Length: 142
View 1: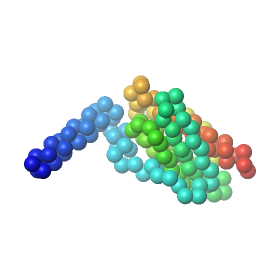
View 2: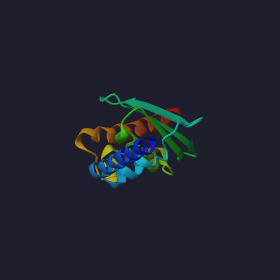
View 3: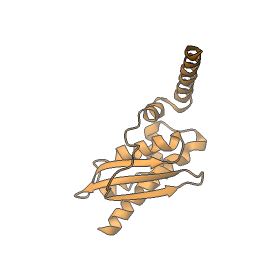
View 4: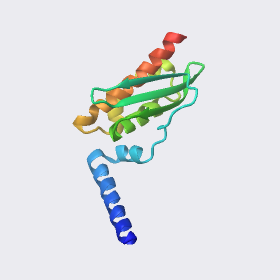
């Protein structure tokens, strides 16, 4: 019985992966399956948390040294689209000046991802706005 159940679950998981890859694209699938920046940062230089109209929230953590982002992480209560959008904004921010990081727009996130389904595009804008809020918070302190 266990082998049959395990086999069924493996097949079902494979279909979920295939459906995700087909509907969301390879770039979104890769980032969703292998998150790099999805974790809380201990002792960030600055952080920001915003919630979207859908109820998702994203928290961005930045470590800044000499005016440049040297590390970025995020947490989200949202869906896979929020997760992959958070991955993009963190990847983008690292190595940039705080001002440069704060210029990212949701359109930029969508371009990197190759788009998201229409009902999920707001996730890209929420992630970018959260990064801009973190940059503003830092710049207001210095």
